[in-house]
Length: 352
Image (cartoon, rainbow, N blue to C red; front, side, top):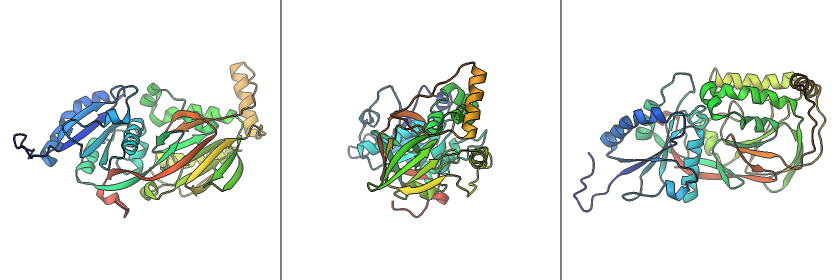
């Protein structure tokens, strides 16, 4: 039963539904908003406020109350929309749960939270609504780099750069397969050299084609399991594949994750648990492996151009698939930054 607005002391229970009107799923959102409103009103007595994300919208603007404070925020969309909403809630310090309805192309965080499987043709709405209304609430860690929040990962290096390349139309049409060609082209780039400072004291000098700092497994990269999302640490991955066999092991791990929805258990890269990582690029060229040289020559032959490698003094930084400044940078974990709703059967014994 909904609150009686004629009663002076009645508290209006409100839920804020945030969506991106420019996403490829907005039509689906328009069609299903009525179903969401009915579920929220009939089962919990909520008044629903739907709010589109607009360019340059601030966290305070997105979460501005209407008829008093919200009791629940729901993010409808892909990882970009979900990450923006979670970051806004963390930034403003609101201690209210966030529900996720995964209407995006990858839905990587939703998969990690067991809100969906990522299988083609899957309808995420019913399970998501059941989770929001009847699931459990857990504390979720978030990462932060260059002043930006991230829910999945931050990264640098040729492999990380490739993840930022697919345009929205390709991701909508080809989903995660849209990353295939950019990742293949990354083989033509030599590894880079970095100095990593771990937790403020330990220094590592590494060569890498990709450095990822993850809170959630992305595309088979990182450690699986919902418990890793709230353990107060990040996974530091140093990927330096130098042969076809090295790339094959990474590809197999991705295949098992994307196609079979399994964790292979074999991690084909260096994996460390960290709380902070300072990343600085060392401007020194790293020798190419025979595979990298072959890929480079093949690209030059097919394009009819000779690409001359230039010495780099800084590297691009990626956050949740989007460009986010350059090195040097510091990546850090923010434990229990937000509260999220998860299916009851998948809720670990975490601090609420």
